[in-house]
Image (cartoon, rainbow, N blue to C red):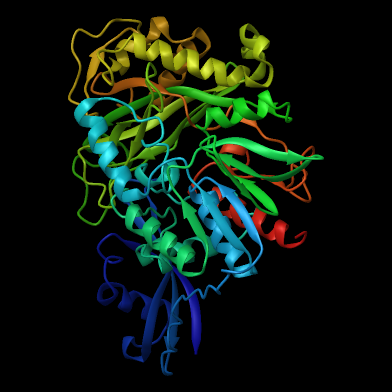
Length: 517
């Protein structure tokens, strides 16, 4: 007999099979000796009360041999001599588009402006040492995209867009821990992702695909409203049947190029704000209702959202046990992001805290047309740079001081390695951001007691939560309505928001190409 059951247990009871097996037997009204297999299907934490519980969904085999667990295997055919498709960008959208194209019998040619992940690591180390940004190799650009060194959370709400479970299985196949198939909010870890990304690249190349690094797209080859290929580094031309444009939300030069060539773009709402950092022990105490976190619990997370003045103010990309990192892609701008290693064992917890930016907020930038939001982003990032310290030193303010419009006389310890300097963010941030954040923080402090505190520090600015520009595409074909064969894809095109949804969108574009070429 085989059964699937749900059971709620204490932290210790759920920690090991030998502990929860008797409770499973009791629920099924059988003896523990009758159970031949218990397999965890899903695991989640319920911390709504002081008595924190674990929800387990289990597959149980009773009084019969345990079926052999099927190993997740993906077989990729040789596409060396197949129809070639160009993919611009080696982030999640681009990489998963490439894998799906191989499955469908096409040869992907990935064009990536940055470096492969091993070299990218060196540039990021140099970023901290010399505090100079390499505009093509940084926390946003390079193999794996922004997600490689930005935590690797795999939670998505885009269930209707495609097979998100397959994305997790592909990551597992390429080296991710099997827990990502079980946990309700799976997480890979910024320390694990580089190896996984390298394994995916190896799969693509072994199947006959191509991956070209240090290759910046400088022009699109278009004839009779049909894309024929791309120009690389101003002197190399590569042609193909179709082009998947998966450049990520920070490839501003691509937006500028499309705009210059009168290729249709659309301004879209986005969000901007700050990154906030608390002691992890404080977040643990709030969320788990205890002064000390149990050994059976991971570093606590939170998800906060409120409507303030009829617009969203919310947390984004929460990184428990993590670090704040510099995410600038050009000189004279200050951008921060967050990440967590797989163990989530830093003593800090950080999250983006952002405010919805609407198109009617951008009236001063209307001369830039569809790029108005991009120019507003750049303006705020430049303000953060000017109000920070030398190079990558970030402007910062204690949380309660920010709410009460006081300059911080001192700043707490932080995970942000380049360093922070006291700055009146409440004064120089655009008013629609600062005022809504201040009111939002007050509301969040009511929901989570002790969350609004001067133990927390806000660091400026968090401006790359999503693209301020959408590259339009037909709903059915996913092709650009103006340029045949051009498939805008992922976060940079305005159709995804994270690793999983971007990967799903990449697969969707590959499948649409297979229907045409």
